Image (tube, rainbow over all chains, first blue to last red):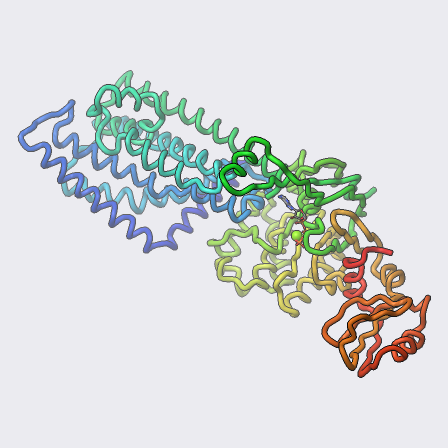
Length: 266
Length: 327
Ligand SMILES: Nc1ncnc2c1ncn2[C@@H]1O[C@H](COP(=O)(O)OP(=O)(O)OP(=O)(O)O)[C@@H](O)[C@H]1O
Ligand SMILES: [Mg+2]
């Protein structure tokens, strides 16, 4: 049962190998941005020892980890892929197979993203880790929790893109919603830009009720050791809750979309 | 017992009219007006296991709409469909396991992947046992000569190669019914012949029930035993091809080159089918009027340069049915 979806993952993983050039370009641009951020923060920290509980090394670690995790956001193309499938009518061929559309899309995305994690994110991280003497998570358990949290955050990001993609069944154009949610709200509230501890109180409150911080801030703060004990457990429970809610909404969405499709035709 | 039964099947599409301009937009938002398109309108037929049926009709006649309902990706407005005891749109997943579908216009293969990878994905999706998969892959690769491009990405295949792969993809899981919507579209003569040969063989050797739509009547004549003609959503003919020829083939066609372009051509017992400059196409029923009578009439009234007479091809019969309906 699970095996059929895993095949999508392995095929997507292999397929990514064929786009070497695109991969290198993305990596190159991302590394430039990371360098800019690192030097910016170094400059901001001159004469300071600690801000909101982050010392220079802490903040650099935070920036590099969160920037690395951000790679998922700009390499995940789920909304665009769904939109394209709807536009070309290819979605009908998916509908004609004994397979779950949402799981299939997730399995495929996971394949591409595993490739990204292994051949883009990991080397990038190691490079910065070596060059700027960043810190590692406090314990092996933290590493494990960090990885779980990254995966949960990834599924949340996926679910958001999936829901946005589903809008394509009703709207001609989803680029607007995509830009608003992924490049607007997500950038602001996911904490990739700076730790949420730095946010003014009202913005932090808004961030707390939105799912975005569960994508980047939670795993990064687990890595840096900002989230520990009870707060760490709460964070992961919040992640799990968002996974359930957003996967559920996605399912409702695509059921409605398919119902529309089978009644109104392709 | 029939494998497919369709009773009083209809599909009506609502098409909302869009008015232009601000007020037009506003009023069509408030009170949306729509037209009803009767794409399929009270259709009845049934297929026995192992039949090979051609489903034809002019553009927009309702062929694809019917196929979509049979495969379960479109819900009928009214009527019943029974496919192997299932109602396709209600038992979509179960139905899809037992049918194969090919849409000539689009591929079900993964664009970026080598052909063989697509087949492997299908193996997992349909949960095909390994030995059956190997056996079928072997069989189809041989029959359709797929070996040279099994490891080529689908996007680099020619249309003919892709169609052969799509046919294989639709049959790997041993479906009982194969639906084909324009499987020969865009293919050259050789490729078309290959597909036809293949369909005959699959039907004969594997007892797969086949229903295919096409605009190429050679497909029908060379492949199908039975023909269903749909016109504006209604079935206007359902029967053998020979019976069709027998029934409508009494019509003879006379092609005449007139010496000058007469403005008005009037003849008794004869239909003017087409006119192109000085050339006219006349059809008449050999039971009501003889060829010599027609020619006598003609020569009495018009000056003729050249003349040929022909027994209608299936193509011609069907064209007349599309244009004039069934008489
Ligand atoms: N989703 C839809 N919404 C509205 N009208 C539709 C829809 N799908 C088909 N139609 C209309 O229904 C009628 C039948 O279409 P259909 O695609 O079944 O024709 P067809 O026989 O397959 O034609 P062709 O030979 O051109 O493929 C056409 O008038 C078409 O415009
Ligand atoms: Mg069609």
